[in-house]
Length: 226
Image (cartoon, rainbow, N blue to C red; front, top):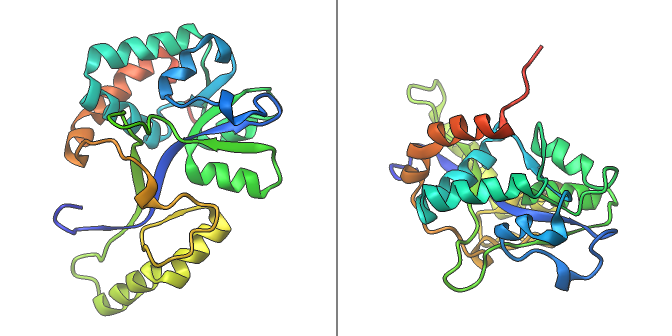
């Protein structure tokens, strides 16, 4: 947070998970989010509903960078191209192989967990060219509650979460992106190597409610709970 009210302890970059059974050649993988609207991916691209706030934030970031007209036109193009929409990132991930989808827009950690389970998947990073839109990145966050009974113990716990060993563990076991540069990333792309979307958290936050409302009218509504 700008005022340090909370801290990130792992990053959540958005990436495209690729079904290698359908797209075995990395040269054919998407390089931009717009590619999800290409003829090659007609009816084979997928993402989640607004039940996933990372999806809401990604589209909000697009609005902040490219404007509403461009963003909503892209959403219409994606839908016209047969974009498949699932209740959550997990559902999107789990449907990739059995339902014959070619690509899924997920959090990078979703890809790594699926890969560690032995699935034939790859990871494509979108809009990374110079001057490109970049990748929207969210995070797992932690904070010390004001007035907590044991604030020093809470701070010690946060220091433990941010330590190189624990950051390495989170990357190795759960595919989480470390925020501590001293961690061993393994197969996880280092945060410093990701070209981020150049927009402030405040601007994204200001657009989230209207983004969620608009997407809900376009077929991205969260499923009703029993």
